[in-house]
Length: 136
Image (cartoon, rainbow, N blue to C red; front, side, top):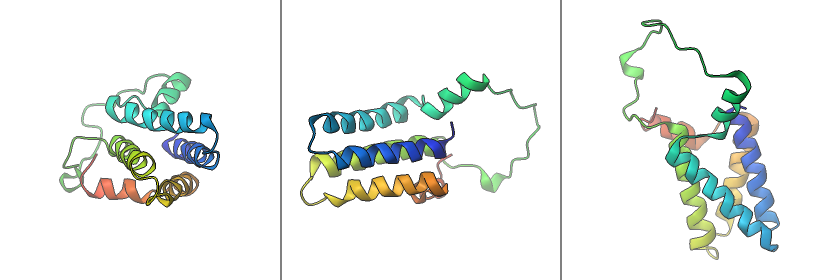
């Protein structure tokens, strides 16, 4: 499973939870999705990595000196951008849906469609911004 597939599935699940918001199970599912993102962001045990390792085994180590590293392309922060993306999305969903549900009712919907679109297209503006900010 790739990160792109994860974003597609997560965006679809988020939109489904928001659509069926009146049902009691939808609130629990939304809390579960946010909890999943927080857990993955803190521990870096991501579902796409775990599925890939279960399917194909551990990746082979690179040979010593086998890759060309350009000094200008090195990240400034030793924190993975995918991890930061998960924490940012969980924080914004929690604030907008549970903190200020009245004035920010549209923001979880916007995030759901943006994440779903990022899964379809492979282009995530938030992830690109985090990488430009210096995350690995």
